[in-house]
Length: 67
Image (cartoon, rainbow, N blue to C red; front, side, top):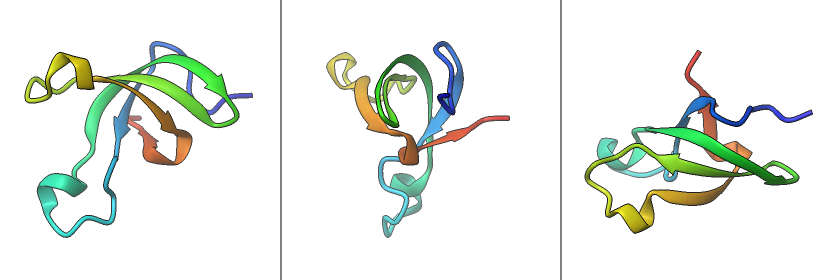
């Protein structure tokens, strides 16, 4: 069983231990696919990112539920 479902909105925390608040803050993302043990493909909803950097493969530990 997977913790997150496809099309579910989550917060993506790439740098949870960063020194600055800007880097620590989670970004809104949607799950696109489950690709293996605790790994997901997500789309980061951040207009400041170039489109080519918005789709990422991440570990489940970098995500948290928005509920």
